[in-house]
Image (cartoon, rainbow, N blue to C red; front, side, top):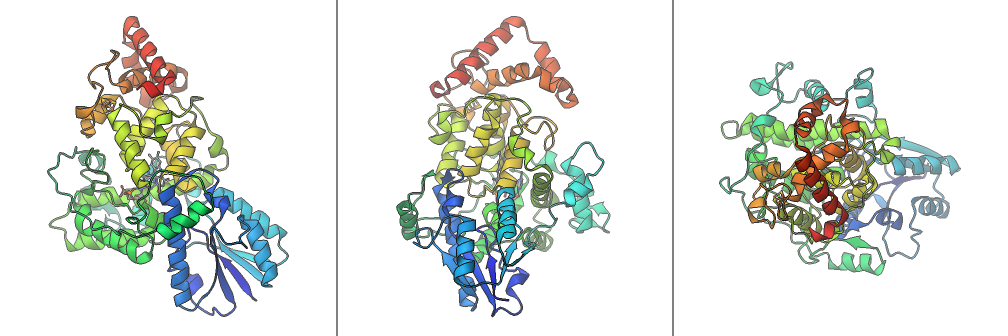
Length: 511
Ligand code: FAD
Ligand code: SF4
């Protein structure tokens, strides 16, 4: 049967079994569409990265004699939505069968299922052959259990895939978790080797995007684009990570620094989320490098990294498919405030927020602790509506695809799911930020002060948050200690805390 196979922008898996076997009757379809550029306001580097990676993969297939239809964003025959383009192409080219890989996003999954019902030709869905787990594995794993603690799922994955195990049953290094040794502040002593980068010229693609009138956020240097957009590039990033950064990954996983945007983080999320690299090959490369250099690299560095991919990444995917579509509307803490305007321009005197947001706007990137303990922490402490927080995170990061963005944002960071992903909210006062970064030493505010004019805003916001959410946390045992500390505060101090927090929430632009 003459077959049309759809490749979505995040399905750039070169190793998929689709590309083996008889190909004469098959045409592959790529589409750059307004439906995808407009469902949220994306960072300009994210749009450029996805379109570039799609174009590179289409070219790769063409060079290997596969038949490809590629609809660019400005093509006159581009109908700009997935159903309209597909219906038109199927009828224009007389395709007799339509095939697609299961999307990772609920929205696209529904759209494709609906479309297939409408089509009068046969259709078939395939696995993406990317993840360790299927959509429903996690749900089955936790069947009958009340708490979906990530740790148990992760240990099971380690055993199942025999990763960092001794005799298939005991964790290598004698422990499952080295988190405690992974909390160092970076003070410049462990050198971060300079990366050459890609320095690509993306000016003509940028012109096409601008001409199409797509709204975006953030900045870009058109002649110095630094994200990997091909499999070759992605392998370079992976190699660079193994050779230069793995050795300190765990140690400085939670560190933040004004002069270092990436520290020892891998920047592999875009390569993996677009599927140019599979999580399996990333973990295998890291393990190979570790076993070849065991005298130099400690198990804690490697375990910390494996946990993120084999644990958190797969876990978030499972939670997404277990909880959607309701997850998208969850707001257990009933937060209603608007996201402060400075999230869009980094114009704030709070140094930690200024740097984390500036980094995000300039690079479409922030590392995990900046996302969780700076921007996420502040949004939660100021009781921002999770819809607003989600829209920002979904737009700004190069790696933001809903399945992994919403579970991290609504779940881990905003506690809007009431404790499915995190057992207690990730909130802190200024002291945690001071412990893990050098932000406070150059800040307009004093991290040690609580309610004075120049006091760190995180300090009053933190206690005010706990005070406002007493009811919600009443049954949460993990909050007991903080709640009893809150109860010990004297009424005068609490009054000052509430007043200052109210002022910060009301007029964020003044801070
Ligand atoms: P590294 O620190 O080098 O980690 C290696 C890899 O582990 C990452 O590439 C990623 O694939 C995986 N990983 C690490 N932490 C997580 C996690 N919590 N969940 C899933 N995978 C993880 N990650 C995304 O890929 N897309 C998102 O849209 C996204 N949104 C986030 C929003 C918030 C509020 C928070 C707190 C985290 C979010 N994360 C998201 C998770 C994490 O912050 C990023 O994966 C990471 O910062 C990407 O940078 P890196 O590749 O340098 O990661
Ligand atoms: Fe952030 Fe407060 Fe430190 Fe300033 S003093 S950098 S606002 S934590």
